[in-house]
Length: 340
Ligand SMILES: [Zn+2]
Image (tube, protein in one colour):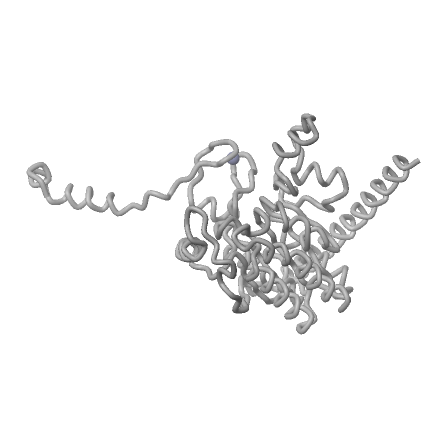
């Protein structure tokens, strides 16, 4: 306390000290429109800017809560792998980078495996955390994808991957590149068991991740504005010596070119995925378990309404599947025309 605070009457002093306790991260700026976003409103909108609709990065824990029924799911331990197999060191030692990433995110690795129900149907999700070393794929991540696929096969569940990654983890050299074929084999395992495999592409999906399991889904869904590609824009422009279109490597551009099947906003994501799983597995959705994650007892009138909502959702999903096959036909048609 200095001489000035001693002069302030006690009541006012308590008011001033209370104000000091207000955390400084109540507001954040939208990275697209620079509008100010209040943290509580942002939480409600699932990290989507309520000024311009820009999809900001979404913490994995919040995303899983949004996806699973009632926000409930089981997290699975990640398989043990040898840390720092190459004893790699650049400006920092790789082991130190790992420790830093772990303390920053509170996670063991750049991936989380979770299983639970969506719309009452069994689902296993492997989701990437971009804040952990740019969501890069090393041995641990590759091993985790294999484990997640094995759980999906064991539980007769739909397998969903949610990549957000800069690509392979360069500190693991060739070992990180080996995770590309390994993750592909994991996906094959799910497909051989005749289970659906869905990829939800989130910003950014690049490098070795986009060149392996992330492009092998039965259905590819992307969030609006997601950056999806292999090499960076500048590298491509310098190599081919051409100026690329403005929206190159965005979800919308890839939708036009048949690589992405659907671009779906975050608030529609769960319903869309649930309906797709229902169609792919030919299992009806449990309307009480689907839709929102709020648990409420419904009167008979209301449950009828939710039943109606479920039918309209199924219709919407069927429409989506039709538009996907239409897209595929268009792209094959264009390819054939180009070949001729
Ligand atoms: Zn915005």
